[in-house]
Picture 1 (cartoon, one colour):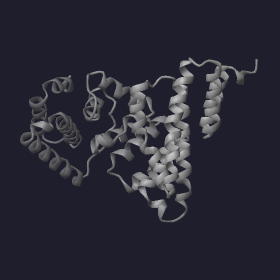
Picture 2 (cartoon, helix red, strand yellow):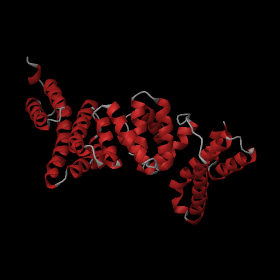
Picture 3 (spheres, helix red, strand yellow):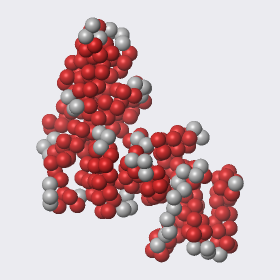
Picture 4 (cartoon, one colour):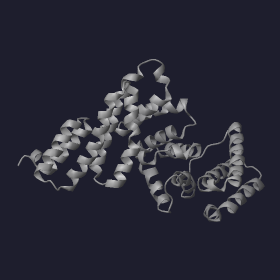
Length: 312
């Protein structure tokens, strides 16, 4: 029997066409497979996923600008995550094909905008292009655009995390660890954990989630345990201006926690992370041990369990 008229063959044809950004043929193949076995769980699941994105593709017609179309597509990942939470995120082959389809479609929207002019210096466009190249598996190209984006937005957790992820995928763990550590220091809430593809960060995320952290608290605790588990082990020396900002940030967080106890679930791990950075600095410059001990005592007061893990 021709493999293309079997359910497995039609499913594979659908996935191959999705990866080639041909959603119409993919949909046809899945519908043909459904005619053969209308209860096949993977066919039903894949059809739901394809229809989710085809519905979004239809909405692109109402957007006049290419950038808006690409940005809209990428913005729909959060809705898709909610969809997967309701329907399950099994069938890795399906999710891989969907990812390739969405990112290649968005990339088509962004590519022609780069040109040779001012857009080459647009960090948001560079970020989107780099993210799309990562999504289609072109990691070297992704690295190129994300490195350019970081030059313009050094203090952006989202851009830093994407660059870190690509470095990990390219088997550059030292750069990846340093960049992830930086990204989670700058702004954990801007990091899309479900968009991360590398085993390095996904294993850490799963370990921290296994400790009971979820929602907005999860990204705040990842750098804490990244340090405690030895994942965020690549550190750099702080410049004097950075040290000043770090101390000011610590002072502000301490005051906010005292005045607004309701913020503690998010701000305590953020503050501990800054204490870790300050201790690293003191150790690096061989500062007075008393300053290290003072900072350690602050950690002990706000979270004795983290203190105990840290000193082991």
